[in-house]
View 1 (cartoon, rainbow, N blue to C red):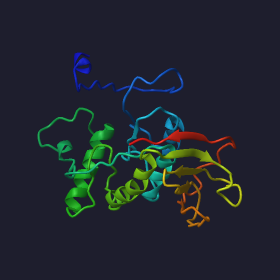
View 2: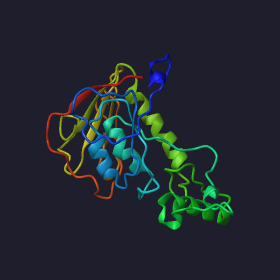
View 3: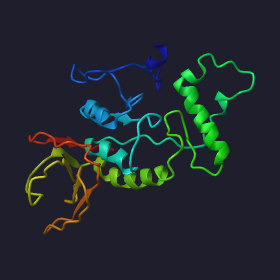
View 4: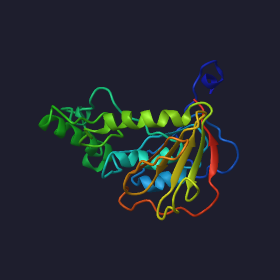
Length: 237
């Protein structure tokens, strides 16, 4: 605790948070996702948590059909997922000769590391895994897709940008969005950026405004949200 009182100190608490509605947050950064096998449940549970939220999808358990799914879950709620990267994690710590692994194959993490080790031996060229929470085998598109979406995300959290979440209808759209939720971001320059959770993709031009609507398929995993007045949020760098 003393460290948290010092200038520049950090206090880390590893625990479960089940209810984000009770009182003011006690954190500066909230990392979420450990052990979550279903990204749908993770999104719904944590989408209303106070900033700053760092989604850390546990890809050792969770699965995605396409890499875009990670961003479809979190960007519409002003959250951006962590990317694990750096030197490959080989998993060799789980196959050290002479080491007694007390739980052996009954331990999830031992099995996960040995999966990495086997893949690394068979495919030294990759794709690699980069951490405990990464998938095995690794996902070859993960890095580039993260960078591509980060370029889209940064303007949404720039100064003097207002964002509306869970938009289901309005003058920006020709018709209500059945089975989909949209996010609209308006910058100080008057640009409107719309992102929807549905299938397909489209670009729309509106007189006097430069509009871009981008939709990503989610294989029917996101249900339609209740119709209500969207919440307005300020972005901040």
